[in-house]
Length: 302
Image (cartoon, rainbow, N blue to C red; front, side, top):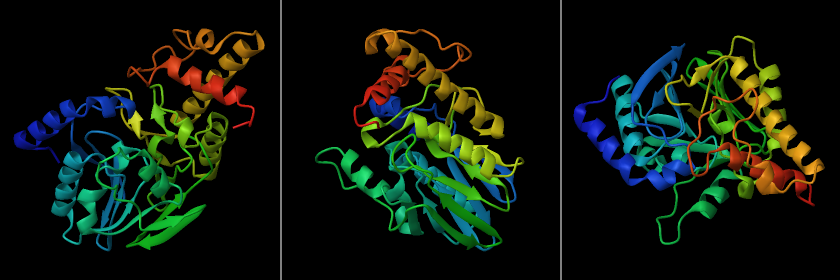
């Protein structure tokens, strides 16, 4: 589905007005469109984290909500595919580029589902004086699953990684998994340490997901380097794991040599990952290495 000229102008104008927030959350250039993957599952690209969707005769399921402007375009497009409204809206985590559109979806959505930590993290991240965020009305600790038409969808939490409340949303029969921001493809990721992130466990999560799901699984990334696709096979998860492992290795080596956080973060390019995309001021190699230093030197071991 292509957007109209009017819709494109709306997205572009809103994008320009939200650049400071967008930079924090790996802002994507506006290119709103629906793409099918297989067995009634697909994705929607707009502004912010990639939206996943399922539309079959018995259910409509959405994964993540982006920002209000593109959430409306997505919701309108889903309405062209099915008149039943949205049965389930999943939030893979709490960041605004994945949840700010919740309020747009809410009137036409039966349930919003997220990991148990997501509502509190959303509320904690809200700006003073801003409207209260629209949060999930159904939460889970480790797993949550339901039959949706002829598909079975499952949400899985494997511990802290990108944040303290990340979920992988799996459409089992379609063999499609939405990774949320557990997968940044070929770009330096945002690591939300104040919200419970763990680089070390992020590596474990990627390994767990890679081995737990069939080799034929297709993975939807939360973000990708501009110009690259957001849909990948398990090799993308393995490369993300290797990137995070290389980040920790560089930081450990620097710490062992007595280097400061600033010296460790000064590395201009990580060997083997020189082409990774940066989105200053936060999504840079220096930022990632600084978070790695903080994690490895934390007296509490977190």
